[in-house]
Image (cartoon, rainbow, N blue to C red; front, side):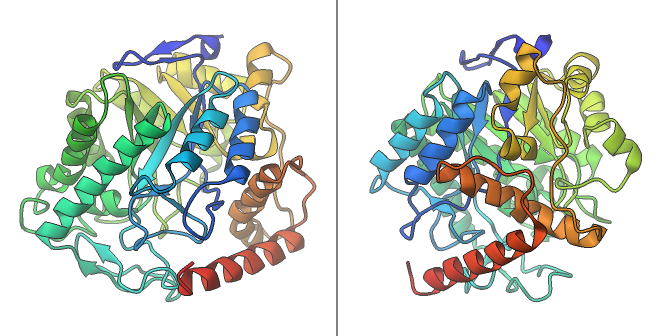
Length: 403
């Protein structure tokens, strides 16, 4: 099975197999934005599960701008021993571990960010007032954000992580720079497709300059935002080609934003049937992209993984929510003891409720593993909803008090 084959990246780093644990939001940072034993315990579990690569959930570059209660932030060396312990735990059983680094931009809840920033002052729509309207970043502030990405990457390397993934998807800050809906600038950072991608390209260059030759650099981009007048597939492919020219080690393909969360679900039955949400895009991009590609979203079975690796010719497949329920699924898929992930999730019989509860249901499984407990596929919807509300209220209150 091709999934079992190692992969040597452009930087010389070797992944032991082609199955990656894709990023999921853990929200397990402490009151000072540091990782602790719960994150180390969770990632030890995943490392033992057989994934060749573990990509962390969001690590934010600025404590003034976080995307969720419980986010981890890395901006200086004050918590470096805790980050080193997290990295060591993640690699204990042979996995590589990369830190996903991010800035939320306008996707910062009003309970966490009193003054969100973005490329342009374009507010979120249809989110029930959960997000404050942002103000546009100044040119000097853009330079500071770019330097913060580079500094966080350098600190991740010092802590022992094997690489970083720059999050340029899902409607966060870099995704906002890429989209003509949210980037209305007319300076060096916006005005046409080439200038809209300038922030991401410059971010890649500064991260590369700040880190060593064998340190992996990945980028996660949207295949599209799935919004009229937004970042579309043709522009996405142009961004991918530009990143290929920069020599990045792995490009992960996803899609959607908070306003249109295509990354979390697919409306089309045909897409669900073939598993991979963004397979068509990956197949088209393969003929234009020479570097290594990673496909995440909807994959659940040996057959789906094989199709992605052998038919669409991607190099790495990412599994996310299935590993919240079966952390050892990669090992069992690779050794033939499993053919597919189990079907699990909230089940109220009301489709809208089940979709709304899917993310917190899977997040609660991560929190169970962080305490040393086993995931519970039978976890009920009501218990999930109560936990989620209590946890967010508690974390939000802590954030408002300044930790």
